[in-house]
Length: 112
Image (cartoon, rainbow, N blue to C red; front, side):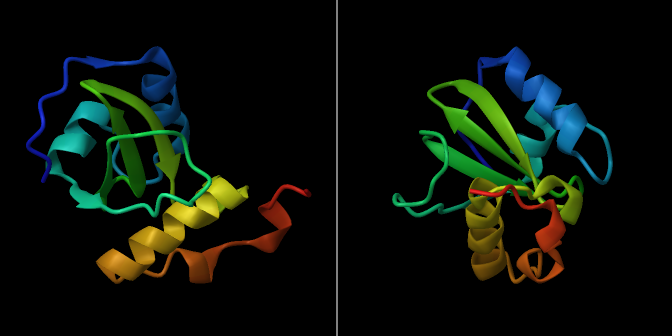
């Protein structure tokens, strides 16, 4: 559970929460408050952030920068479409003993 206060949710983050939630639909703030912090390696191709929080009920990772929630990554196979999502799923799998990477559908991945 994150203890850092959040002052705002960007419209981008709110929209991504709706688009990328595969479980219970809640606000990004609820997912952030009840989730667990995951350490995304610095070399991972994800947006700059101060904290990433995994919420198992929505299958999402909410990213905080400063006091704002800035984006959400979905972890269901339909939402993992790029190396960015794969990096986030791998970090969650390693730290939270989940198996999101095992469920990735390679047909959904963007061609580079």
